Length: 171
Image (cartoon, rainbow, N blue to C red; front, side, top):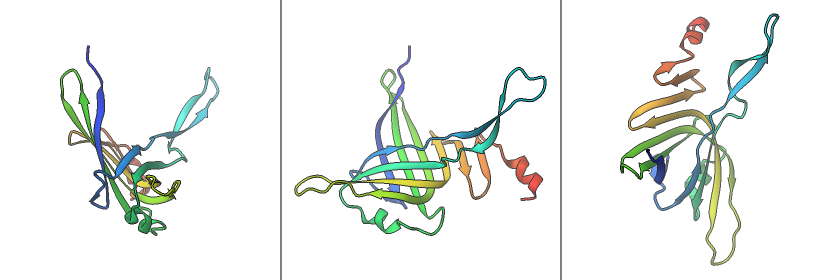
């Protein structure tokens, strides 16, 4: 019997700046596809056609303690890939002690910044939601998933699933 890999520690980087000791939590991006049901003649039920990524997009939500001017100054950034963020996680198995390095790199812009409740003598935190145009998941140095919405690239396990479509479109 094996025990699962458990997140033992994390760090978050914003444009290369470490949030060690400042980052409180991250809600990692949900990856979802838009599927549309199709049922034609002679089919006993519908088959869902894959229409690409869902309309929800790719979002990273993260919480920082204290006051952070870096993120605040990035609010309203013009480019869809203006803000680079990197999540680094150390996942460890409690049976073997093996540590797995997980890295998620995204680029996007902040959709919302919640300043939270302010009270004298109390701790403060910012909750930031970043809508992403780029996403890359790397586990132990191996790229598992890479999505670049602006470049029309979607790689999963080393295979670019949009390469033939780009070729057909001449891009």
